[in-house]
Image 1 (tube, rainbow, N blue to C red):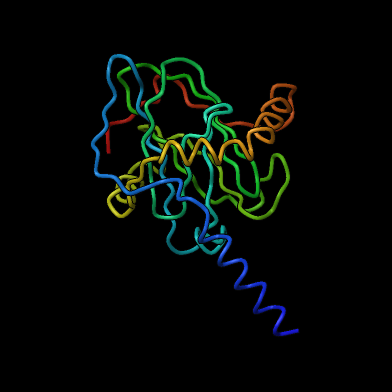
Image 2: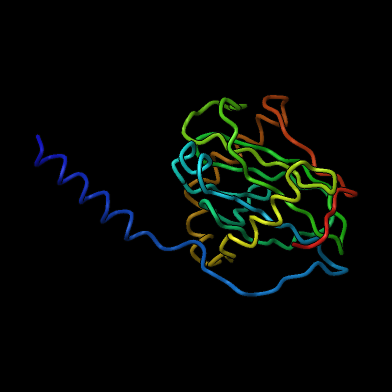
Length: 196
C-alpha cells in the first residue's frame, strides 16, 4: 500500500513538473492609455488566504479568453478594450465580475478568499473577484499587498494552449450566468483607482 502511494506521489510530481509555465515574472511598467483601460488583478496569499485556498492556481478569463493565472502573493496587469466585460475566475468555484471600463483609466480587482461563497458550487477554493474602488475597505491594504506581491505577465503561447482544455467549461458557465444562474460583482466606469 505504501509503495502504491509513493508511486502515485512521484507520478503526480512528474506530471505537474512537465506542464508548461503559464506566467512569468516581469518588471514591465504598464499604464492605461487612450486606447485601453488597465486592470490590476491582485491575489494576496499569506496567512489564512493561502490556508483556505490551498494556494491553488486561479485562472482569470475575460469572457472566454484566458488572460492570466495567479497563486497567492502574485498580481498581473491586463490592458482591456473599453466597454463591457465579464471576468470569470475558475478554480474550485466560479466567480464573476461584470465590468464596464473606460479607456485611459486604471482599475483594480482583488481576488479574496470568501469561505462559503459558492454561486456555481465547488468547495476547493472560494475566491471572489472584488472590485477595488477609491472607497473600498480593501484599497489601502491592497496598495501594501502589491508591494509584497510578485508581478507576473502571461506566456501567451502556453496560456493559449492551456485555454483549449477549459474553454468549454468557461463558456458553459457564462451561458448559465446569461440565463440568470449565479451572481456577479460589478465594476463601473467611475470605479477607477490611482495606480498602485
